[in-house]
Amino acid sequence: MPGELKDRRLYFAHQYERYLASEIDDYLSPADTMADQWYMSVGVSAAQVIHAACVTSWVHRVEAVLDLPCGHGRVLRHLVKLFPDATFDACDLDRDGVEFCASRFGARPMHSDEDLTKLNPRRTYDLIWVGSLFTHISHSRTRAWLAHLADFLSATGIMVATFHGRFSSKMGREYGYIEESRWLKLLNEYETTGYGYHDYPPKAGHGYIAGPYGISLSNPATVIADAISVPGIRVFSYTERGWAGHQDVLVVGKPDLLA
Image 1 (cartoon, rainbow, N blue to C red):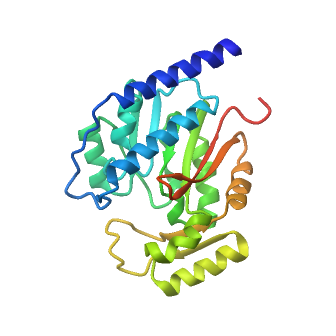
Image 2: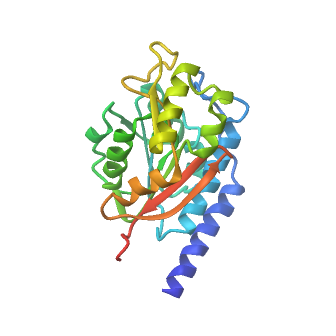
């Protein structure tokens, strides 16, 4: 075990050093709705978060990666440099984003479904990155989708997922997550139950997003309770404001608690 641990640490140290020395593709699709002054720094933060998750879990190598939702590659452009020998699947409801990630970053395109439990990649992953998906869905969907995605983890695979946590509950009105009347309702639900959610208003300008999507808030205790209810995985870490100083980061994966 000590030798294996040393090998893992050396492997991930090498991967990260190589990433730091690499040149990140900074071409943005004209259709990328996430483009802003923080775009590249948010991707850098994701790479840092994912590297730390790998080091503190039991994943041996990262050879297969799922980026969900991939958008137009805000994080994927960093992951292909962090794990240059891996294969990547780019999944999203945004078909233009998926096709951009396939053509620009060499990922396998995977078109998502409004009901994510219908998605079947037909493979397992050493890393599943779920950046800002659970931040937009109801509590029942979060529980169901966490469990569904866990089914596609390899024997030592990890899922790194982000949430709107306690910081977001304080800053949501200032950031303008959603109109105030809806914000107050979801905030009350959050304070009462530990998880609050409200749909976006109709025609809110979110483009391709179909179905019941909106804004959610969740406290760490609720997220961890949901995670430990998923059979076959363990919780490796939960970091408040771990991603770009904003969203909380949950790391779960295999082997399970008794292994």
